[in-house]
Length: 322
Image (cartoon, rainbow, N blue to C red; front, side, top):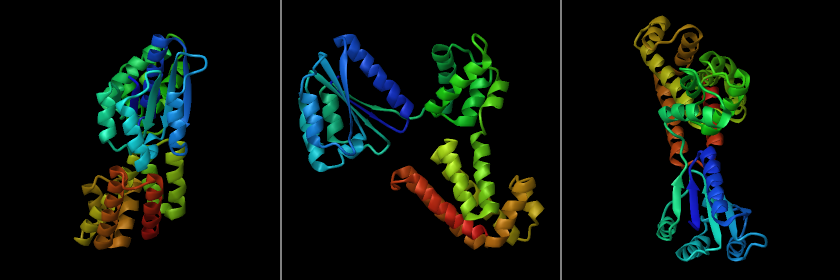
């Protein structure tokens, strides 16, 4: 393959498949010269010159182009690369790596027609992630996961392979060489579950106002690595609860009755019902609809920066709850 395109959000899979490609090239050609370029800033001439020039020390070159979606965003560059894909250099391999905003089209078909590949690097399902953890722990970290350990790990983190691999390394070290990783160790060493992290944001939204909610959002996404999809789910979920509670209270139900029907207990019942009374069913419905639209924009790629989009929603929501 002289052109390989890796697309998708899962950075671990992009790195892992890049390594496999380089290993395959080294097995075929011996040593390989590797050059890395940033598609967001490098000119077309730099990419083509690198592909068409001969390596100084090795028989083959691997040219890695990151941010490939930005590089092909310009019409002139896309057409030039389409022409290159029709007859790629045999002395070079072009590895293009892109995120979720890759737009498939004629270029992809030309890559595959020339013997190359366009490979999606998407997060696996939770069931596949559980199986992956068991295999990865044994093959990469020399440890075995006791029954229930992989399930709890995926429940807490989700199917993010990069984060799962980091946690597996820590758990294997904590368990000790040759010892299995019990479920109790996962519970002790791995942070809050996604649901627990989501409730952290919800409770701050309901009681702390916009500034505290912004700080919590930044902590969850930047520090704790909570997926942005979970942030969207968390905000929509709490606004759904507030809307449903507001509707029940407007029908004459008590806070206790509304909380029981919505399965809310303790602090969550008090906070949700207080917000529901402050908003009323009409304003609660408007806020819920806005949250659903915002969540859809981030998932459909219409938002260029999902974190900033959620920050704006958090400010509006926090102000309304005050």
